[in-house]
Length: 377
Length: 253
Image (cartoon, rainbow over the protein chains, first blue to last red):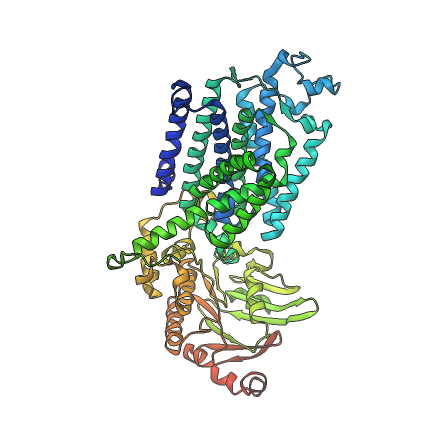
């Protein structure tokens, strides 16, 4: 049953994307570890980490495309689930520091010693175990999304109003995590990580592994989301997106479906955040900032909403552009991003991948006699 | 006495009142549909036809009155749209609403009677019986050759038929059909009347709301005339057409 379910999502586009992602998961770390630095194809470690970060963004974009592209839920707060997954991983990494912290306290992280706390808060218990922390990486965002969705979708909050409350959700978390007495390191967040499952987080091998794992997450996320959208449930999601009340009148509980897909999406975003943190070396409340969530929406729009592969393409392309742009003209990046969003909305409403597949379909549909293409519009 | 009436009826409305911001959309509407009956409901704009459908399908809660299904055993005023749909009441909207970015076939596939839970649909596989049922429905609504087209590419009349097909796919006991021939050509109108008569002949109860008098005459069933949120007249088409009150408010313009 599961195999049939997963296989159903594998159309040509998904398979090509999977091959590309899995090839990068193997070849890029190899080019970093096996080739000497003088070799023209050598990938420096800083690039490996940068691309690993893009991969985690791609997984976040996939999660967002699942709810926005297929179910019409425009979440402007998906960064919150990403950041919560990141905090859960950060807590694990903090507990691994042990006596190597500045204050050398075997149990308490440095910031707690600094705040004169005497014992570990109850919600930090268990985070020294990797398996428990990984469970929390998916459970915390999942439960928050479930509870949020339960209330919002049952009350039939839709459209702009829903977008605004998702935005409020992430903003509320931003303010909460800024507070020192929340016990998550206040505005400094969690940093100074040493080890992850016994390996030094700074080590080249660890970084290569984290890159490969991030690619694997994107691949697994793609297989899962593609399987979901190609199942009958996926057809129900599209039906909800296009004609919500019709779906209700043929007997589907719209709120249940929305809550389900929102929760799955939040869990994927949480996993993405968990792989992001060890690669960038820090998690702080700014990850909850509304701007981050909005940027994720732009990645999906640029790549092509409702295409899954487009979300990955958009996340990587926009972030590569961001890295390049902030190097050349740092103060203009936000203008460029805003301009890009306007341009894509006006001229490429289906995004890169959506426009490409439309163009391909048109070429295929055209009769052979008409092979010489008409002037492009 | 109302108990006895409700006990034999498939759908029973008694003294239903609904108001929106002081506007009284329904002022004590009572209506009984027998099992296996087809009924036409006519009335000028604002007579309360759509509000009545909203009350039956759970979209609107009546302020007062009783709305019950299957011999009075099920109180529809307490249930939500999805539950009512699962009980066997299918509704076609005034404006054709189909799933535009799905194919004709998928529109029917989604509507087919089956477990509506998310985990059931996640792992669902189209069975042979379901495929056969879809073929049968496509033939009924005369869209077999359009099965792989997107619903948004259908003509207005074809969308209306597809929506009726989706209603049938749900295997409801009662079909509520709101203005099925609005915007149709004369030929399409007559075909739709024949389609509804066939559906009725297969044993389903049908309530048709319509403006088009030629169409209602073609159906040849008992007619209820609504006016200002209540029943004005009821009987055969000739009976209501000759009722002076009906002529005054509706036909005599």
